[in-house]
Image 1 (cartoon, rainbow, N blue to C red):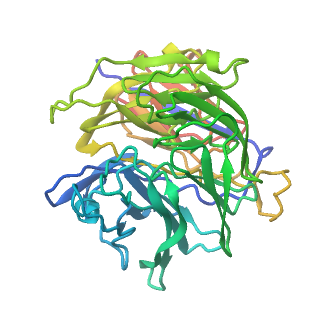
Image 2 (image 1 turned 90 degrees about the vertical axis):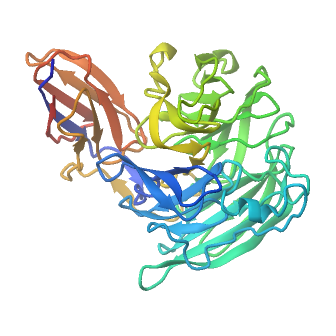
Length: 511
């Protein structure tokens, strides 16, 4: 029986909250994934959701993706350029001027010339490169990347890199992006060739970037400012641990950092000072199983920390009195075989885009992804885990896009909040840009809205007599949410979303 549900949506935001200047909401709009093989033409996957019509497109690529994928969009969410760690291409899928041969290393040996073998495949470890807006220059971007391992007997799990490098991408007077500098050596040492991560400085303009010293608890810390890049070293607090490659992120507010450490079988959690760039107050759990731990993600509110094992997903409650004891199993499976390629896959890295979900990437070339609907839900049975249910039109070979929180403003009131960046107040008269898609829809719709920051919204659905029949929150740091109305009986419903005060309405038809 088909439904006709008329949904009236009301959104409210008050003027009581203030945030640091924030004009970068579209920078992380696009997620690009891909697959490596020996036959051109190459195809990739582009997730685009900022425009108000969430799309997943199969796009032509001038190169392929292995595990690493980096990209950046403009403030409106339009893709500018992307990289697999070796090459840089624009939104027209053409390699930009001087955008080839990043990190060239000639390494003859049992695998042949590594550059020849992998210049098309791309960097083989997650977060081998990262793209950042250059502080103080809206037309320039900085790419930080690690080179391939310069050892003859190469494997992509345990060998170090010896160079961390920089490229600068600029836009000319005709709007064409080109590489004005590349292969600038920033660090020459044994470093991990992946897991590069970044967070905004507490002044809201500069960037902290971290790269791991290979096999020990030491790290290199970069501070990128308008005039220079400053490099220092540091040591993570606590007992030393071998740290291998995985995807790593800060919490959305930049005040927490955690990771399930591969090959040390530990989970580690730190407080982070955005002014000094220092980690502190280590809490760790050394009871992890001897499995591969590649995926790490914070829930949008920062209450839970999720990590993946080979065939399991776990989480910690970071607000529990005893965090290590709060570990609970989210989901486990006994194996997965891709129905098209007929190859097995395990859980790999994680991604947290702007829809409040956590996505889990498979480790092999497969046509599926897993995801978690409600990561901040207290009852683990209600998080909405979907095991390899997201069907992809093209295979993805474990590649994942890493975006730092570009929207993070100054840490207001902290000692380093000294740049007097514009404080953005919520304008109660400004429209939210509310959109719903698809419309008409069947059972599930997505609502998009002006991007939230640290505040939390609530959504309520009422029947024709005013009885509440559904409620859920709108996640912090989101600009859209997926709403499931499949269990509601046919009828007309009112939907109201509260974010401290402002209202906007529209209609949705559900067939």
